[in-house]
Length: 115
Image (cartoon, rainbow, N blue to C red; front, top):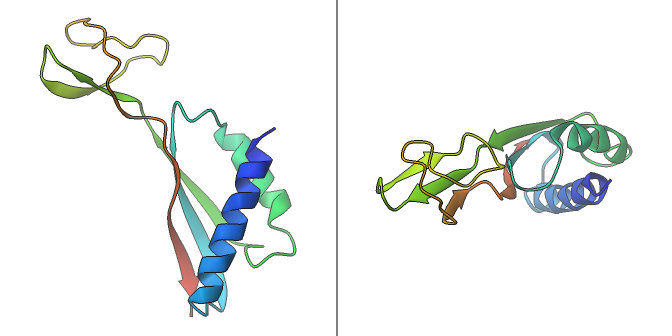
């Protein structure tokens, strides 16, 4: 379960940022996770609950925003959401596209702290 190692990195990064901001308490951490990032939301949440014990993040929330995969279709000349991650074809005109515009993200969007 590589989600645990991802969560450990998040905890380390957020702890350092909160410490630098002289935070008294970390309330929440907000992540953006793309559908093609290769992680499972429930596994991240489970890992966070275990890994945050005895850290500055203990008792805080992990909020995960799931992002759908978006591709650019050159025929339609617009960015469209894929119907399925199994087929990288425009859902409007059925043209194949490898121009992925969103879906591989795995990033800390923000943290909410009390100072």
